Length: 395
Image (spheres, rainbow, N blue to C red):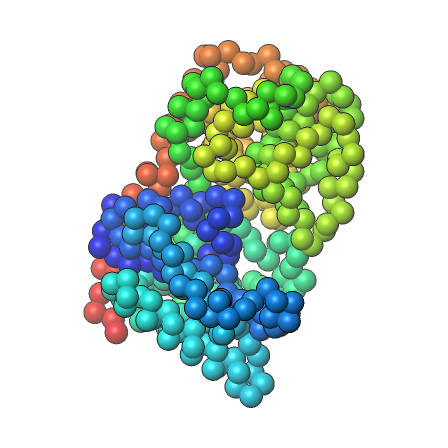
């Protein structure tokens, strides 16, 4: 693994959010490097609203900007007095200068060297060149222009293309992303998602079952992950209505920010159980408690480009999987039931319920045995080392 480096990870979500690939990667990089996880930056208008409502006070001005959460890993929040602002009265330039100053002061205090910027969204391009960085790494996990909340996909594509061209290293999680991004930068590489294979296998062998899952009637058909706009809630509703004797367990935070009514059709069904977010340490136990695991994604441009982290975790637990027909599922088509509609899903779930043998569980686990986060971080380390060598001597 690469060592002795300083990483600034500009994250699109807080550290205590549901864990995603960036959490897994940064915790492993922190074993031999220093990592500053930078939470999403505040904007002027929301900050002013919070100030008027009393949600921001003088104590917030004195709070530490960087808080240690693990060895060599700190979570950083920009000072409340320096939100992103507009151009009026040059306020945006002023607050940006204050943010940069606070960041550099924190880096000096923590003993960071010249950092490696790890960007996760196209709109973070404004930090390039402000931190004295040695390298710019852009990690792409989705086709962001296809997000449900995006109003101008073409503007997103233009902004991202500019950042991709400026980056020293671009990492993508799916073959579709590699195909669309590599023409913009030859230093673009595929690093798929993975799982904590050993940890999930241990959980699968542990008889412990979360009490909330024990209370549900069997069989349990479950989904464990973020409940966002890419899920096919009509498919879930059709399954629940057709098989009222099945428990449909949906484990994860409900975050339908751009389409808040999308899940309304399942909320009142007696056999659909919205269990909410669970701690990352509990995730394997919820997965292993499902008789069948679902990947109920809509088929669109967003899901055509994903590499489902959940799929690796499901298989690492040895659970049967039923997935809608997306490219990520086809990569394990010999072990995953792939369906196109509700009737096919019902038949597949029924068949999967009969595949609970230990032999099948071991086959699934063997299929992802090499897809570990440790292996992914070793691959990333090699790519970063090559990029550092390639840019050596650059000011």
